Image 1 (cartoon, protein in one colour):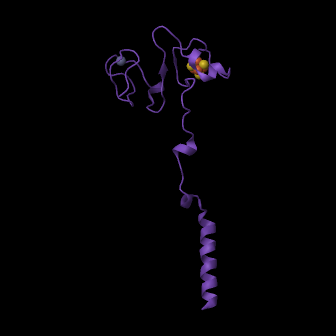
Image 2 (image 1 turned 60 degrees about the vertical axis):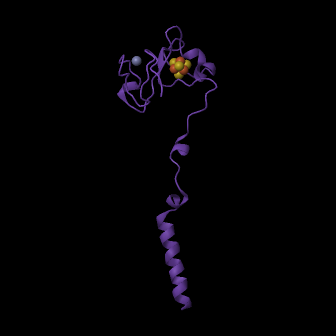
Image 3 (image 1 turned 90 degrees about the vertical axis):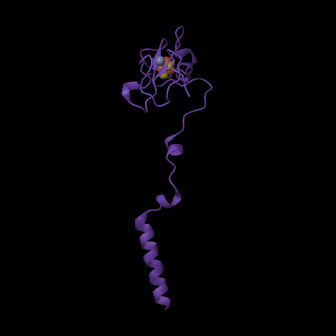
Length: 113
Ligand code: SF4
Ligand SMILES: [Zn+2]
């Protein structure tokens, strides 16, 4: 169970804000938008990959205390949409061409009878 970054008490992983100290944990009140927070005496940017590769153009950089895009250096990368939403092969088959193939198969079968 994760801990609140401010009061360090246990919280639910999908909590929008801490039920104890009420610090916001998700950005814009959206449960799917993680809001990363730095500790009391530091900033997020020195340990962020986007600061390291110079690709971040957020105005809060390099002294962001909270950020939605923070990606810790060395942490495993987030899953891609293809990895999250795996589509089984039978859902990828085009129904139109599948119908044509079935009709052709039936036609060939009937012609042999
Ligand atoms: S993405 Fe956020 S934490 Fe990372 S460098 Fe930019 S402002 Fe800092
Ligand atoms: Zn708290």
